[in-house]
Image (cartoon, rainbow over all chains, first blue to last red; front, top):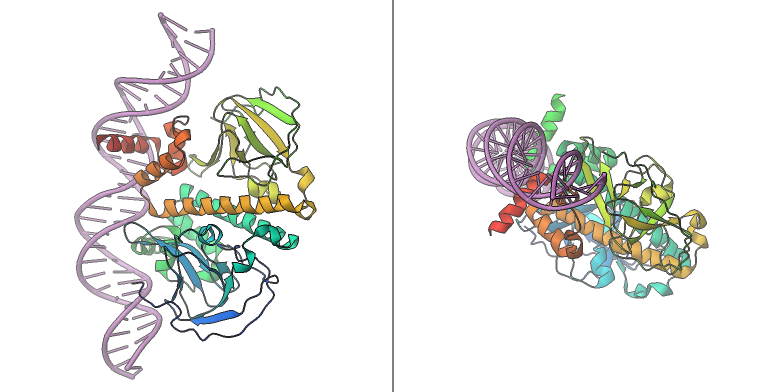
Length: 205
Length: 205
DNA sequence: TTTAAAAAATAAGATATCTTAAGAAATGGT
DNA sequence: ACCATTTCTTAAGATATCTTATTTTTTAAA
């Protein structure tokens, strides 16, 4: 199921930009502006290519120029549970792994043909050496991500599956038509079959 | 059910400390060191006293000197869902409300007789004016909180109720004996009756 | 365009979790 | 120590969600 070779289609290009965020600023829930970053590595990925696997130490944040990535875990019953979708201008990685050098809990995989920048954290090992304005942006980005994650927790604790589905549609309208039913189900925490039931139930109304 | 008058037992004291974190650094999942803070307001709360209600704009972060608070939402079916417990040395507030001046989603309430510092965010409206070392600490605190929140999301998406309960016991062993079954149930996302069943099932093993 | 593969829909039966209600145990106040 | 209140346990029936299997539809490849 997850046998695609990472970077199997890597038409590497030279590409330098000034970008906004620190590589750590990942698991973002909103597009990022990248003026503070330098990146020289860009790759074209095919659907199904895996950038990071569970158990590896994350070396990069991935900024999506085109296409869409997902980060997900495989639970003890073998089911995929999606943490985050990363469409254009979003960044994704495993924050714990990249910051604390622990094995990644997540896989990161392209769900469309995608063009991705590899943002190394090697220049940023010591956060104290960063410019103040970058740190301010980091703090704000983390804070916004934390607020979003806490809202997702509230939803998972208190909303029904149907509510979580309609919330998802409202929150990410531009994503809905690009994602498979299976992916949305894995994000909101139900089986694809049950999400299909939910859709039918909603349609009948 | 939530009729206790906020601050009904407010033996206010003068109390000044140098503390570590910015008031925004809330919804924390770990004790905080407070060397960068000033606070002059301290109150003694009775069990059941409410510090912040859903719909209010949060003005303070609450640092727990003694006792334990909880932050929770009331969902559409009237059920309480706990976002965070805040025992000694932890801080709690509604981050979105205090940072963005939006109505709070949560209630904050004492679950034991508690002594709490009120940390105003009025001195910190503009994050750019903060000292760099405070901002660095903020960023790290937000980052760690975000990692913890994301782990909780993974648990809610992929673990069974029994697994979430045993995870909770492992993660917060010192809290388990202080909390009611009802509170733990509201945190892990099951009914108290079902958590009781889970305990019985575990005991039988 | 045709065909193979993947995704989605449907349905029936199984399981997890909730609801309601009642009794037992623990707690707090007087 | 006693009573009232809250918490916890237990159990039965209800509901939400999952599992498995099959069919239909859509997508991708040749």
